Image (cartoon, rainbow, N blue to C red; front, side, top):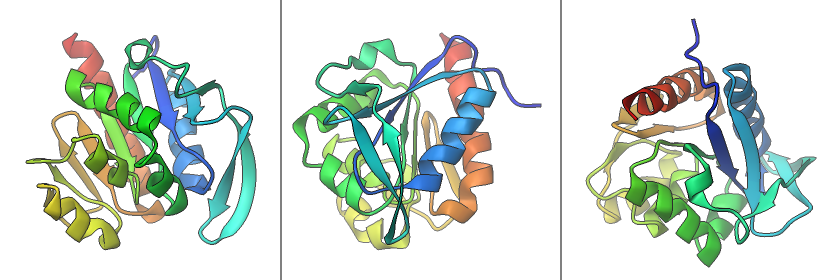
Length: 184
């Protein structure tokens, strides 16, 4: 049975170039568990999803990062894709929003290239995590303990490597978000 996330507000931070299934499948799982989910991006309007290298669907942005407050959310989802996380990690509003979750100890779920943004938000030092293999050196250089596993849970941080890991990633994300809520 899936844990209930009723009454939880979850932020998804992405921009053009996110891996579509790494947003859609976790968002569907979060909503099925009862969470309210908002997509946040640097700009309003729509953001472009990708299926690996090919453009996929466009998704409406609920709020810009500049207008959003991390205090309004109970958890954070960082989908992968190469372009989106790389752009977000140099966006001051994105980094500040993500850093607020890190500093508050709120649960964060990041998949594939998603953990890249956690480097710039000072969220990986001393943490055990996984990612797409090409991020291994970047994460280790930032002080993370990188492992090659389908899903890694380190306290409030859930990470996975790739779309094939989505079923176990979604399950652990929901479990971790529910456990953090129950601790409050």
